Each structure stands twice: as C-alpha cells, then as structure tokens.
Length: 68
Image (spheres, one colour):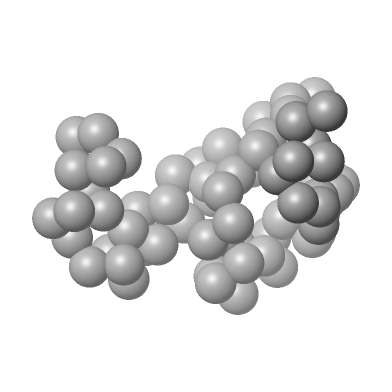
C-alpha cells in the first residue's frame, strides 16, 4: 500500500503506529542515514529510541532556504 493510500484510508494515529513499527525495525542498522518525516516526534517511544541509538539533526529552516 502506498503512503498516500494509508493516509487517505486510515486515521492519523494508525499511520503513526505503522511508521513507528517500521522505524523501530530499521534502528538496529549501522552506518546509515535515516531521514524520517516530521511526524516521528509524536511517538515518545520512537524519539526515546532515536535519541539512544542515533545522532539526530533537526533542520529548522524554511524550505526556500533548504532549496538553495
């Protein structure tokens, strides 16, 4: 199922649970760059694991700046 289909047919909470499950399965990977969407911050469990097992960079810039 495509991401847009999940968002259109499921509630946001269900999407966040699916996202959480997949990211938690990917966390054991080493030497990888992982760029999740902004919704990961809504999962306390996920953010706790990300803080313990990875290096987090938060980009807080307008899109126009990032496009340069």
